[in-house]
Image (tube, rainbow, N blue to C red):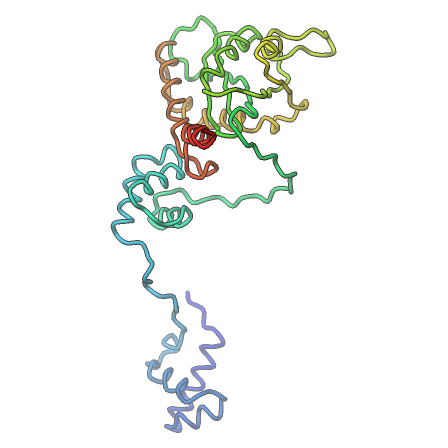
Length: 310
């Protein structure tokens, strides 16, 4: 039920008085309004108070609104690329000549009902300013993720599978590998070929305090095989503080993305299929455009850096 406002009641009193004396000027003087104001509302008045409700002044169109071609382009790109994120959709639209901003595209997606309504974000506590990375290889974060049992659709004889992930903090380029053992041997073997897979020299590697990376200092002073390999490769090594997974946030966040976009949607019939799908998924990841990279993909960021460096 629509609400009758005080403004509508006041306008009704003005118009009824103007009709009673049949003089708009007299009503304007009595209620301290202009004659044009009284005339406008008197012409609109049809005997019901509802006709005195103020209508929206929002324009139905504007000269800079999206054209139908632009809306069709957004629909097409969203239909084919939404699984890789809206930043990827935006870059694909720009490649086809789209000139609007990213926020403008997202607004049109919401208006057309193509995207899920965004949840209100909780206010976060003010954090210290993050250090800015200046070149690929300045810091690479590494972590190990359990492959979900629900994704294993073949007889594994109770064997567990692990995904080891390395992600570069500057370019967000990733290298993945599937392992059936979580130990310093498998992680050190992974690091031996990491620079070749990344395509650039690595200055520093950061991991958590897992036993697959480092020995417990309370148990022994000896370096693990993983640390010895890093020393051999002349790569600096640092660990996160205990119980502080956010310090390794890039790789932790990418693992959450892997869970929702890869493992939760697939069930593999063989180990070979799992390895092949994981390689294909990682290739797609490194070619996905991201907002944090100014709508470029990790491979583009690396290539552009070395082009500028000469």
